[in-house]
Length: 476
Ligand code: P53
Image (cartoon, rainbow, N blue to C red; front, side, top):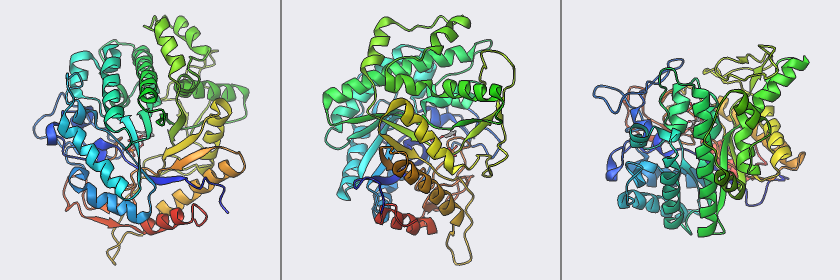
C-alpha cells in the first residue's frame, strides 16, 4: 500500500504563455514570451525588439487554451486530476505591468477558469510569475534590474490574492527563479527577469541584483498572501537539476558542492530567510556593491515560504576545471556528460534517482513540505497506423520517476504534497518554442509551423496516468 498522503495532489502543470494563446484577447498586454520566435532542437529562440511582422511567435496562439479551457479541464477531470497547476499571465491583469488599475477582462478569465476547475473538484495551483513579465517593464524599466519592479509585482500579487481568495489556496511566486544562474543565456535572463544584455555589462552581477529584487518581492508577496488569507500555502519554485561530481577526486567533489551552492542559494533565501555565508564574501571579492538594504534583509527574514515547489527533469555532472579556491561555477560551459545516463533527444540526462537525491537534498537543508510541480519527458510523438499515439517512452520515464518519488516518501520520510507532471496537454516548449517537443497525456494537433486543427486526443499515457491516480500511485 502506498505511503503517499491520502489527499495527495495528483495533477498536471502548464504555464499561461505556453498554452493559452489569445495574446491580445481581453485587453492582454505583450509579455516577454510574445517576442520570442520559434527555435528548433539546438537552435535558440530569437528575442526580437517588440512584435515584428513576418516572424513566427508560437506563444501568440499556442494551443488556444483561452478558447478551449472548458474542453481541456474536462479532459483533466476524466484523468482524475485533483489539482491543476497553471500561471496567471501578468499581462492579462496588468497589460503594461505599471497600470494604475487591473484589467477586469483578464481577472474574469481566471475567475471562469477556476470556477470550471472547482466544478470537478480540481484544486488550482498557481504560479504568479512564470516567464511572462510584461514587455513594457523591460523596455521602460530594464526588467528586474530595477527596484521599482518589486512594487509592480507585489501589487499584481495582492490583486490576485484578493480576487481569488477562496478559489485558490496553493501559490508559488517565481517559476524556476534559479534558472538565471545561467547568466550567459539571453533566454534565461529574459524569461526569468526581463534582462537585456548591454555591451560590456557584467551579467553575473546584474543577475544577482535582479534575483535579490525578486526574492524581496517574493517575500513581500508571501507576507501579503498570508495576511489576506491565513489558509494560503505559498511556495517557491526551484528548478532542481542536481550537479554531480564526475569522479571521487576531492576537487571534483568540491566543484560540485560549490556549483550546487551557486544554483540553490535562492532556496536558502526563500526558506531560511537569509543569504548563505559564502555570498557576502563572494560579492565583496568580485567588487559587487549590490543594492541590498537592511530593510530588504528584514523582509527576507519575515517572508519565508510554506513549501518548496520544484521542477525535476534531469541531472548534470561537473569536474573541477580551474583549480581556483573559488571553484567559480559557470553554468553555460561547466557541465560534462555523465557516462552512466542516457539523454533525451534534446540532450537532457534521464536520471530518476536524481529526483530522490534532489528531494533529500532539499529535505536535509530546509525541512519543509515539498511539491513536485514539474517532471516529464519531451519527445516527438508519431501517430500510429491506428491513428493513436503509443507513447510507452513517456510512460516509462514517468513510471521510473514516480517510483523514486515514492521511495523518497517511504524510505526518506519526506513530506510530499503532490505531483504535477509538466505539459499534461501538449504545449509550446519554453526553451525551443517547438510544438514537436511534446510532454502531454493529451495530444494537440499542431506543428512547429503553426499548422493543425488544434484537436485534442488522449495518448496511451492518458489512460496509464488515470490509473496511477485512481490507485494513488500503487499501480504503475
Ligand atoms: P522545455 C530549462 C531547464 C529545466 C527546466 O522545458 C526548464 C528550462 C527552460 O527551458 O523549464 C521548465 O519546454 C519550465 C517550463 C518548461 C519546462 O521546464 O524547454 O518551468 O516552462 O516548459 C520544459 O522543454
